[in-house]
Length: 201
Ligand code: GRF
Image: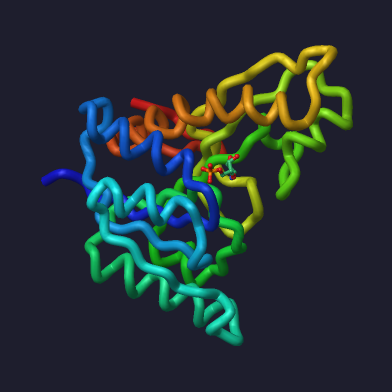
């Protein structure tokens, strides 16, 4: 059976687009079962619709408690028989309610070489810090922010005349290669977690 992906987004959805394309050209053997956005105006929703993928808006504002929002997400993903959840620019912190519902089956992409520069402004933070390399991390999600076992990383140079924007663009290109590849690795199975190390087959 082809594994079923559920994608969570909040914005433009360029990583979603990269995953759609990887599925389309056979680099990734998976079905995108559902795309959920917590923002009704997220550009990624249109990308999904254009690809004929089912979409859903679940606004966090409709829930008083984070756990209840997470329960609604879990319910929708379960109803679509999702095997692997991919966070792709999803800007809400998930609680244990969500994490425990998909053990070792949630991936996130982050635009820095973790554990350096966690948080919402990773590219700008790396640039301000004067890092000479930065990059992208795809990791399994646990209850700690930007901290689960690392599945894959790719680095890019930080050039002397970079701005936060040019650095972010260089990282984004790597993101679009890295995310489909990391999903492929995880779906291939046979890996294990040792300590906090993701050890592929
Ligand atoms: C990416 O930089 C990703 O690493 C971060 O949020 C951004 C989402 O971009 N988590 P997009 O919506 O996939 O274009």
